[in-house]
Image (tube, rainbow, N blue to C red; front, top):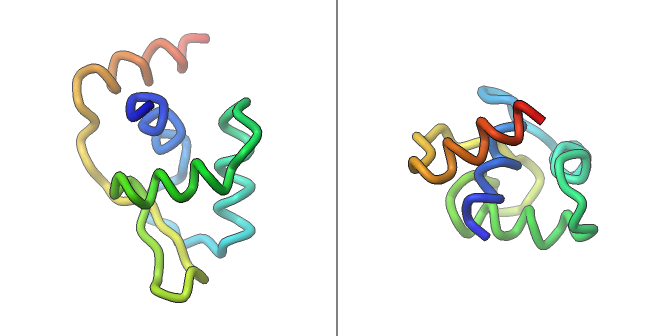
Length: 79
């Protein structure tokens, strides 16, 4: 599960703040799971995205993906 979250994370633009509807669009466009809210929550829980206490603003947390996730990100990018 976590390597897949890293793939979604890799598609979220860095150094940008999103509203909740905007981050939902970013996440929904990057998966076929069908539940962007669950994925958003897991991205927050895994500290891949941050959010304000009131949930109005979201941003990507810059981190180095682990090796397993880097390989998956690379493979997904190649198609």
